[in-house]
Image (tube, rainbow, N blue to C red):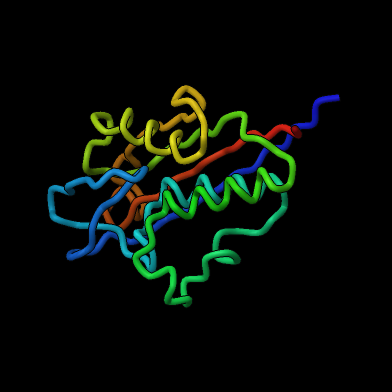
Length: 162
């Protein structure tokens, strides 16, 4: 009998001047020179995926494993943290079937970067790019994303028991 688990994840970070903008492991340029604020690299796309993976197995959230007040995670590459979360999933006898995400940002336009994001995430997860969905949308100038105060991401992950 095949066992499946679904998890969802969400993350949002504030946009600030003087910070890098990294999404899906890719450094991007915001037209206003803004980047995401956070203790690590603040990659909301990867953070939402990690929370979806952890949630599927009721393992808490990324703050439990990578607390924002722990100096060892200052400026951490979220793709490295993702590898660790995938390792936790595998240690428990599960494998990732696929992940799907939607990033909400007014700017910059993400479409030209989506293939690179999918490839980077898939490589770190030991998956094929067609197992990683990355979509982008605006918030039609509504809410914090629409006012360009931040960028958010929602993710879902499907796991199967090995």
